Image (tube, rainbow, N blue to C red; front, side, top):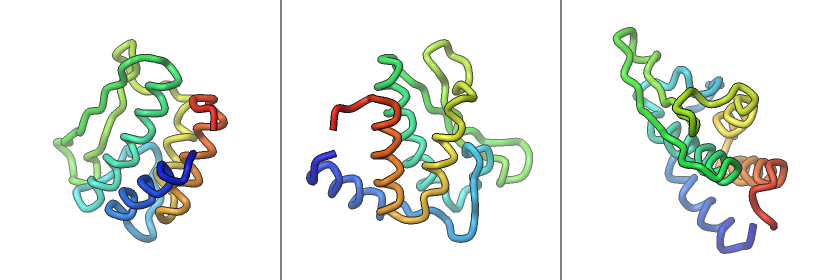
Length: 119
């Protein structure tokens, strides 16, 4: 990741901080309060998934008929099904990055691990 990319990711991620004192698992429960942060982070995951699969990845904001905390964001794989389970740890890592620096660090390490960029 070059300095311009890192700076841009830091700048944009600071606009969408995660809610404090919450841990999310794969954005199953996001609620309304942090939906902007959730969508931002899911967008990073979807971009990495798209680069890895060389396919279009879909995002859907869901509104539950249950309580607000059951609202969230779903990721659809190229097959149209849900995001494959082996990507859930990547989603958890992005969702639970504590601050912009941590988010950049996680995104960078994921991109290296997945081999989607030649840094």
